[in-house]
Each structure stands twice: as C-alpha cells, then as structure tokens.
Length: 178
Image (cartoon, rainbow, N blue to C red; front, side):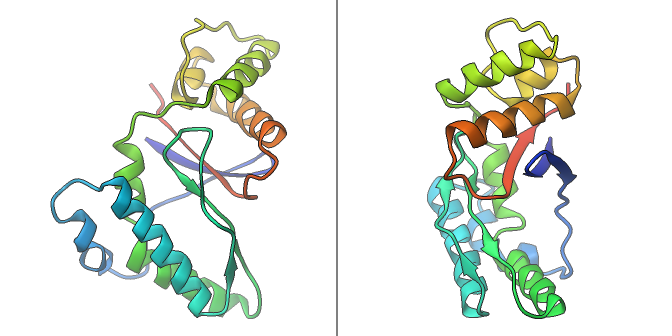
C-alpha cells in the first residue's frame, strides 16, 4: 500500500521512517497484540497532537476522512525555528503514531462516502477513464484508471475540497496499486 499526502494538487510520498529506533517500543501499548483498534488509533493521534501542543504548536481537531472512512485528518501548524519544528514533529511522530496509524488504517475496509464517490467518478470519467460503477475507494479508482494514480488523486482531492471545505490542508490518501 502507498501513503500519499496532498496539499492542493501536489502529490508527495510519505514514508514511515523515523529518527529513532524506539518507535516500536514507544507504541507497543497499541501494537503489542498485533491489532490496532479504532480507540487505540484515536488515542495515539490525541497523544501526538498533545505532544505537539506541549511543544507550542497548534493543531486542528481531527476529523475522519471522507475519502477512506478510517484516517484521522488534522493540521499541525508549524512556526518558529524550523529545526525545532522538525525535531518536535519527528519526536512526537516516533513516540505516538508512526507505526500505529498505518497499522490501523491499512487494516480497515476503505469506503469513500457516497457523495464524494459519485463526484470522483464523474471527475475520473471526464478525464477519459472508463469505470465499472462499483468503485468504492481510491484503490478501486486507481485500478479503473489503469494504475494512473495522479489523475485519480487530483480528482479525489479536488472533489473532496469542493464537497468538504472544512478538511485540513493535508489530506492523506491510502491506495494500493494493483
């Protein structure tokens, strides 16, 4: 599976690398039994946001993504010294969500909310791709577009922003190339 973060229409791959090797240890409370529950994932995100706030960085309230029905979306507002920002986000990520978030999100059945699914279908079709009409998520749309992720992700982000203007500026989309 691939993680992608979108700001506007820019596609940026996001890795799960961390500066510290203790991420697994720090997150063992949720990873230990091999299953990350929704409650554990939400707790991890809350802890990440609290860690960033404790360091002086503000955050928006997390909302469940209409794109996949699983990922929590939120903004953490950077500021001050870039080196301090980078160190803080790396530390908080490593200690709270770097392994829990993908473990949870990748284990979920991703289903795009119906209005967004319909809008994305219209957009993808307008770009010349034929759909089966049974697409439920970003992975299905990418597959229908012959693996061409960029035009599909442009549609997903554009339609999501149009239908859900309250979405944070960074929108994460998990999709699998088949």
